[in-house]
Picture 1 (cartoon, rainbow, N blue to C red):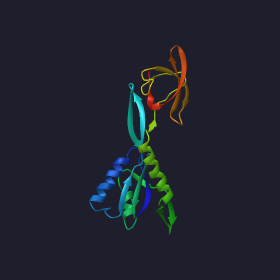
Picture 2: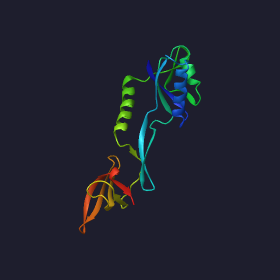
Picture 3: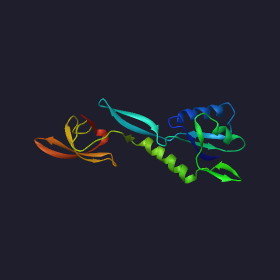
Picture 4: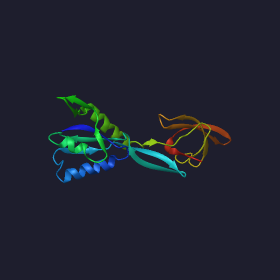
Length: 180
């Protein structure tokens, strides 16, 4: 069995997984499909002063399928509702046939999913220089600060906090502040 990438309508990834799982259980794809995966990432956004964590596909429009494409399996997968077809199809013997992912590509994709599950997720909160924030975590909890520098690649902020009448610079993580 090899991993293949199915192109699906964006936003329908979970629905396609459900269809494939149902086809596996009723015997249509039974022993030919082992796993169906939708690589997801956690995204943190801020609404009404609260941080909200959502899970969404980090490859919208694609579903990974570990399958043996023998007999009618390829055709069955392509006729599932919301499926467009296989990614990386190549011509062989006068017909298009899907090309499986290389082992390294699969390991990279699955490794990315593990890293996203371990980490705090991606942030959709936009911070800008000069903006006021409130510190919600750490020794300076409940202090107000002004953003001096944004390091979005590291998810860090350099802020200025007024302590005892003097401005003090701090470097904080996105999770330690919220917009005022």
